[in-house]
Amino acid sequence: MHTQRYGFWGYLILIIGLAGICALLIIINQDVLIKSGVSARLIWGIWAGLFSLFLLGVVCSPFWWIRKQRKAQFIYRPKNSAENDQPVSSPSEDILTDLSSNIRLRYGPFWRRKVRLLLVTGEPEEAEAIAPGLTGQHWLEGDHTVLIYGGRPTAEPDVTLLTALKKLRRSRPLDGIIWPLTEEQSRQTAQLDKGWRELINGGKRLGFQAPL
Image 1 (cartoon, one colour):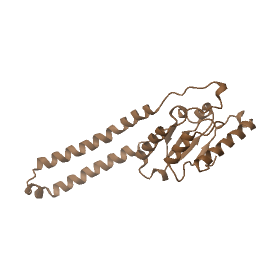
Image 2: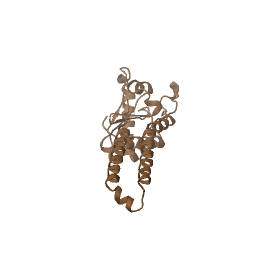
Image 3: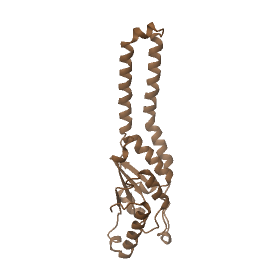
Image 4: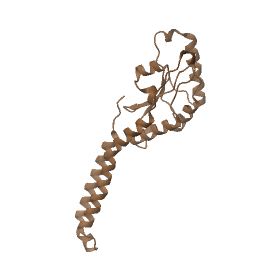
């Protein structure tokens, strides 16, 4: 999924607009300020320094965000067949806190009304097939949609993940659950039943049953 930097352009336009308004106010009130003992050179120096700092912060923010994203990633190590029912690494509370900061920066303080949160549960291979990089990064964001990897559906519910999801958006923790399956997996009734039961258990722990 390709991320879009809505925040960067929004803040850039806002700062340029504020700089223009402040410059206009300075020009209009320049005589009054000079009579008050403030030199024009000092006024324009403060104006230039202040908005230069703002612009520098906006220009550097995408590089800061990329560096932060890289720190949040860690290598996924596959497990052998004897450990298939053990939960694989899932997003920790710290990672979802980073996710919250990211989407708040992109969509503003009211992001909860603008962004869909979808939990992807399934074998790592199937999850990677529909969203490359998801199992390693644990979440992907783009086009007002966030995919969060929740591990194998047949494993015990990840309490840490469910607790973090409730903190992320309390009223509606998830908008839906995606469970990618191969044709062979879709015929394994026993595994499907077990996975379905664990999803129900996870919904009870979450306090919200998201549509599958």
